[in-house]
Image (cartoon, rainbow, N blue to C red; front, top):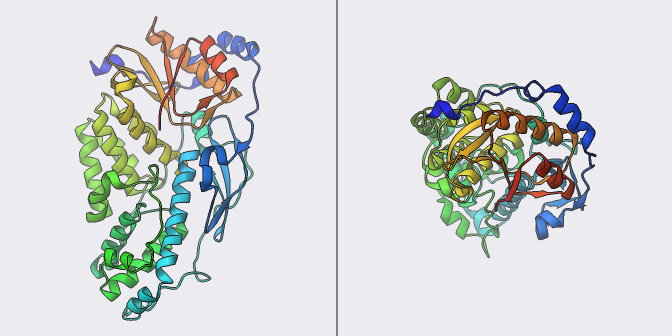
Length: 407
């Protein structure tokens, strides 16, 4: 039965008759995505003790691009959810700073052979900088079928650190702060390592250390950044053990070993990303999961890798309301789904959809491929973001039904 659901990924332009492309390009006007206030998406989180989000946020027609000023440099974060994750990590840095400045913590650190934790001028980071660009990594992914594979990964745990207990402490500290123990965000990664080294050297348990801070560390839990769904495994297992777990889950879903290898060797994913994504795919338990994994393995930016993780979580959480997802198929080079009643569903965790040239090409190509393979079926666009009136009108003209999904 799985073969009946399988479609071959193909170039959008190759999939669509030239006449249809020309007709659609001529038929509809395009729109320029409008800037919006950052508070519309982030609320009061537009500023924290160590960051400020610029008041207006750009859009490329799929994702919002947030410019953020921090003591570590200026950053441009792609997407509302990815930005929330980074802001949550900045809050965690502030919490660690608060811990390091506590008199009681200073006394404890004085007993450490590594000495007190030093934060500040000696911190080496490589801020991405505020990049003036018109499109996000997500839009580039949507508009390009064949993305290159990332470099191979190495085990994230240092053998020496593991022997000294630093890696164990770092994982526990990160999980207590509800952040990724293997974060790729340099300011947080450096602070976690420094604080964990001092706590391990002083023989200070993590929870005891957190309790020493007057008033608590003051970090709010973010549903987006949370690692709570896998916290026990993230706290107790090394990176190598997590990768072994991911391999086992995906092999049980009939994903070929070579495809799994491409995914786990992609350094744009952290071990936590891979675990959380694999657990979501296990819960979904759809046929042809390899189509999703093949696409995820091509992620060539950090925010695209996070998008795949979030999308797997949304698919698993919202499968029932979408009619019961039973299989992945490929249309226009993108993994979409088939439900129990035969509906074709394209569910995407994007911020907003404007009718840009890229969106036009994508929907024209996907529509042609779906009509050819599933004649008579109405394709469903399920999105967590808003759809502009023009985009909704043009997508509707192509025969799609639009459904809003909760995050």
